[in-house]
Length: 557
Image (cartoon, rainbow, N blue to C red; front, side):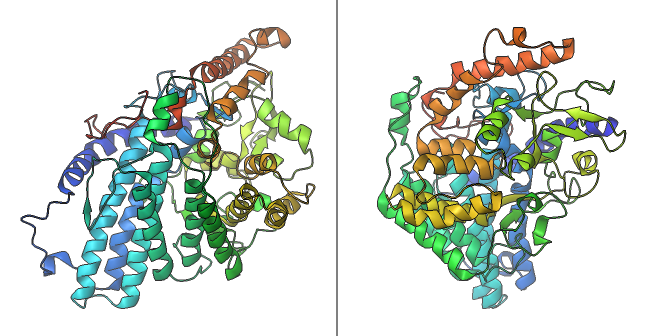
């Protein structure tokens, strides 16, 4: 297990390297990008152009270096800030447990890392667009080369702004044309920029080629559908968050129908293109043998590429974090060590099993029993031994993958798949009262899962389907923000098996098991007690080296 322990410490090494190498870049970039053009020479010279199409595309590809370190980090906010996941990542003061307990502050590492990297990616995209514009004017790149490079840059910039506004609310907006890096903008400005970038990307990019690592016209359309659904559900303004910041009260749900209509329009563009489809087998969606559309089924629409801790910025630690210490759950004398993230309790599995025991997605989402391929020993992931394992974080695509992949971190992260497009359309139709029309896209997911179809899905069924289809795929808290049910959904943990104060009397535990479930109990209690209206947003973090970024803090922090 030495490799596992070395990989565990990789988080700290990466943190140090990022802080040393990037915080100065962000500070300089944010200060220098303003509306003030005085003293700036806009003349095109050999120093601010690239030589050819390949160089233009390579320049934009550098933006990915800011996305790759975030693949697992998103889960440490989006999933831990929900009723579905808790963290055993070291001491309670570590960033994982802090998020799990709703105790995040301005210097909590995952917030710092994600916020800064997204803005660093925006800075780099802005610079690339400027350079490629100059290069087109100088005749250095062709129109096709310009379209591919600038289309990709605007796609990535829009995705960064969408993540930022979903997690932090009104954020600064700055592009190659100017803007402030400290002044927070109203949602109309933020979403307006996202939509402008994505509609530009839609017109510039080529059709989906079967390679989900390459942004395409259909990927831009899918992001537009997602954007209009998010905006259509009326994100809370700073004033609205302030009104509930210190309460355990959810605001009223509201929507804007015209934006939901646009979500349907863009979902239909993807659907009607004929370029995408649901994979025939849900279990063949996750893992190295299924990434990059290797099976040619065209469900993965856009993914973030990873080759492990080699040439990319960090490697995708999803498998590592979900399965840090394989088979060390105290059985068969093989030790007892806690994974970095765990299912919040048995109940997240039990409730699904009770409702749809034959749902084909359930066994892929949660593991309750696994055999160690090295020893042949069977291990149980259910109390009183352990909680169920996040199966989507474990590469099952080839034999012994669960043992190998935790040290390689090379599984690509799926950002958008076709199933989301179908569910976006279904949800928007239901919100508009067109429930019967929603049945067709909705039932495509249920038919693949092998569960009953419905004639007219309800809003509650739509919400549950997001859980069934996308558990642990980095949607949980973002959907709670949209539906305005963050507090009530988190407080569902009060019904979980190990929430009750007498949890210990219900089963017989070994000393290690008792310590494990005591932490489960403490995290469930903390979630219930700590969640507040302020958690509809994350705290505005510091820079990578702890510096104040000059952006007004969110209410309640």
